[in-house]
Length: 276
Image (cartoon, rainbow, N blue to C red; front, side, top):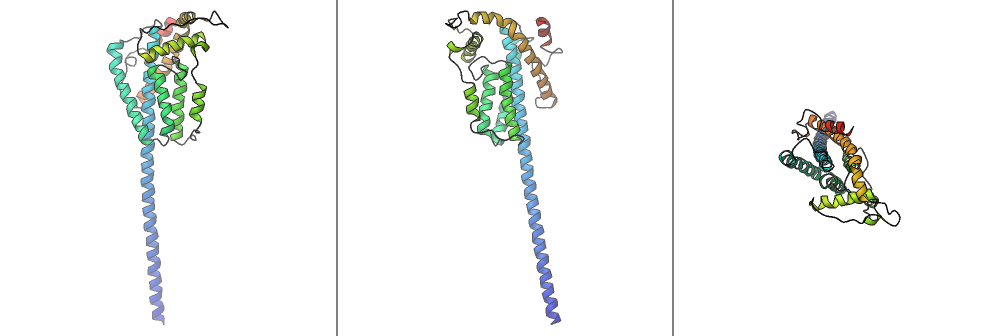
């Protein structure tokens, strides 16, 4: 009897040991699986951050030089040569942006809702046209850039995903108006937008000034005012983007300098002196 009890005890003990070993093995496998998942999520998070950084850096660069382009049209030439210095640099910036977009397409869980933000920012920075069909100004760039940052926070799980009606509201708020309903300033910006989209600086556009409500409303007058009104706004945007570009360079997001970044003096300093 005692012998049978000893055998039974040994069997139970062996079974318990086997169960414990099995549980331990399963726990180890689960831990390894969780570790692999964690590593995969970490890599995705790093790729996402890299993607957003590359895109934002590229658009900050493009917008910086768009400000110079608008300033040159207002009589303030940039401290570099457009053909010699800008064209080859632009190609490199575009490649930076494309690399960032590829990373976002591969890793973002919200790419369908993110895509309109990328298109919006590209239209404002590259084409110089805002959602209302007017020539983009610094406030338009900051709004579009803010939308992209919003999605970076969503992808990082800092903010909640946007609702299905988010882009419908943005579209409704920025619906382009007919030329007849625009103010003189908006009409001028619409004409510049048409030129930007046509890629034809020699395009002629005829606009009949005045209206029944305001016969003195005249884009030509607004055009003359723009030479004083817009340069200070654009100079401020130059300073903001120059600071951002320096930070992107410092963080290693970009490893090259543009025509403005190669100069010892900030490109907007001389402009501010002229405007003072």
